[in-house]
Amino acid sequence: MAVSVQDVKNAVTRQEYLTLTAGDEGNALRALERASLWVKGKVLSTGNEFDEENEVIKTAVITRSVYELFSFVGFESRAKQKAEDARELLESYFGNTAGGENRETNPIAGAIRVP
Image (cartoon, rainbow, N blue to C red):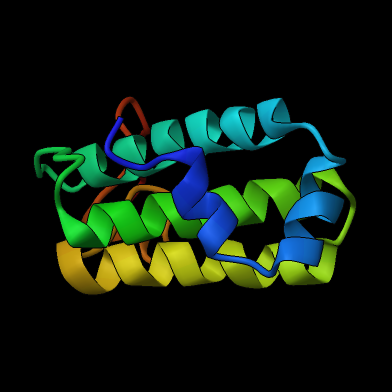
C-alpha cells in the first residue's frame, strides 16, 4: 500500500492521533484499509485505474482515513467534513463518482434507471 499509517499520523496533530486511535495503531491501520477500499471503489466507478502512486489518490486515501478515525470516536461533524473533502477531491480529478450528487450520468452498476 502506497499510503502508510505514518501518512495518516502526519495528517493530524499528535493529540488528535492519540485520541482518534485510542492509542492503538491497529485502529489507524483498519481506518486506512477501509479508506483505501472506499477510494478504490470511487475511482473504479469513474472508469479510471486505481493507481496507489497517484498523488490525488494518496491524498484521498489519507483524508478518508482521517474521516474513518473521526467517525470511529464519534466526532461526526469533523468526520462529515473529511468525507466530503475526500469525495470532492476525487470528483474534481476523476469526474463524477458512483454515489455522488449526480447519479444520472454514472449510475451504480446494477441500478435501474427510470426515464
